[in-house]
Length: 203
Image 1 (cartoon, helix red, strand yellow):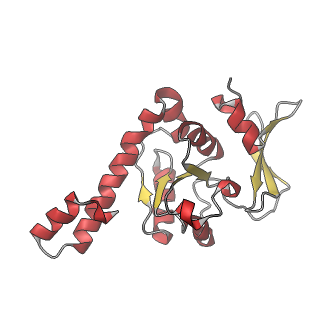
Image 2: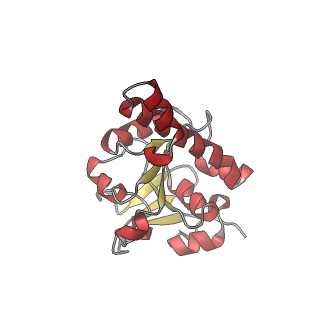
């Protein structure tokens, strides 16, 4: 059974997403201690924050593991919007997914939430603002892997249409780009480059 934006009701309930009697959807942003900092409220034609003027935080950071041992053995998906992160949780059980509250609102000090994860995928939408988001985050999180989604697509659209297999090829392409960039950076000659490109040690 699905609810808001076609996301499984269980996923929405676990995240505390509520639908009011008037049809508004309230998505809570919680800090690491699970305290609600602000709600993002979705109406029919716009969204807003309640209360206004609160310093924003990434959506979903309360779900990230406290244990460094677990984080070091996990992958993190950094999505552009809340519904993308929720849909990613639905389809990628055992992975971790957070979202920036918009393509243009990355804050450098949010890096601390990403630092425990050796594998971080950046999943801005398949448009110019989404790709700018990926570039901005990678500038502060250089080990992150920008994912190039098809033009006009986002994480939720791919997953809801094609399931997990709809997104995996783009994550694998980001892995290949990471391997190539690392090999180019580390290699001292062609043989070294080919060995690095073929080896898992890049990761």
